[in-house]
Length: 250
Image (cartoon, rainbow, N blue to C red):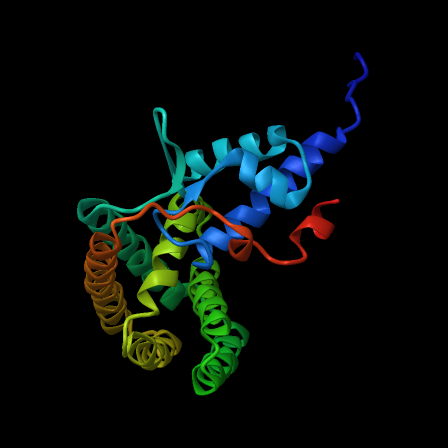
């Protein structure tokens, strides 16, 4: 059998991955707003690197569904249409309800105990007004239920739209009252899963996701009204990226 020959990874490839992760994370957490123009030359200059890894990163982000490219206009952070948001949340409701159904059958006592302990992190984040910590708590909560379902194909399907959903979640948690309602429902869902009450748990999860859809549409309307009022194109500037980004990428 012939030996497998692999070339060492180039620094440019490693740098491209880091640029991708940096911009992706800032988009997903909402630090870079929907509609923000992403100029290759501006980003490269901010980070002190060439334009090639930036261009590669933006191509990956487009495939992820996080940015949009337009002829003669370049790339912008994706602004979801109402129909796109509805499609994503309807799919999410189906996937998460299946995850809950399977988790009711397969979750362990240790996993239930972890979920209950994890609730304390979410409550502490809300008490402190730390919405980034709450966003991470929320992400980990849903991931834990998916893991408890123990279905690899379900996980693959969810991962295909996960970044887009996380991007939308970063917007919906800004809707007044949404985090408080959500965390209460989280606790109820944990109790129902632990008691193996499948029908009730699935029903509550469906309500939980579809109410998030309503809040996402409310947030879309508010953003649209704000953009109409400003009637300007936002450009990516230094405040959108972490101050230490240039050093971290080197």
